[in-house]
Image (tube, rainbow, N blue to C red; front, side, top):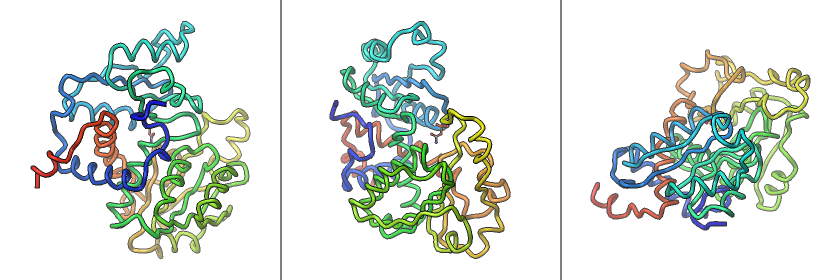
Length: 312
Ligand code: CP
């Protein structure tokens, strides 16, 4: 794999994560820079996206680069049968970096094997979503003032939810306690529980989403039940509305509690939560712009030290 690429959050050391958070904070204060002048970046989205694609493209524009790409593979030659390998090899002739979302787990890793330019994984099936995790960590740091020793409750689709899988792998550096709340059909996969066991991460697992959990939580991370991951749509219909967070459920929650959601949401957060100051999901999406500016610079080997020093 190309060492510059970002395929999984597990590639990043604790120091690299903290550096990216510092860099994201810099870009929040100074978003417009000329760090990508003359560079062209491709965004190849084989799966739908609003936030990830638009925030990556905004990040490139804010850094002075240019973007090519597609948001719908049906408009490309992959609809004529062109392989992923050929698509990646072709696009890499034109650009300095490829940002790719694909419905197949492992697609981003595969792309790094055939591409001479770095790849950023913008989500591969139910596997990983590392740039989402960096914006989640940035959001947690901003709202809690730390990453260490937090009680984090993950609710909803823990089976197919790539954002929660990536978050667990990143948080192992910071001594978290996780609560996994899901119905039997969408439980946290065993490999992530083994990961927790191997790394000494404390976790509880339950179907119940009540006050005893909510009132002892620092970060409440809600997720959507993802219709597109189900082969049996009757099963989706049975489980899609099992968990809904309502404002009244937050009455006795901790003052520092913040509610995160990678978005899009469907029915899992009632709109009456939106005006609660503990609702942070729209700010979280905004943080994605700054986190992605930081990731692009890291992957392209752009050193921000001088720029950050001169801004002090
Ligand atoms: N959080 C996230 O990945 O959103 P999009 O699917 O809209 O990119």
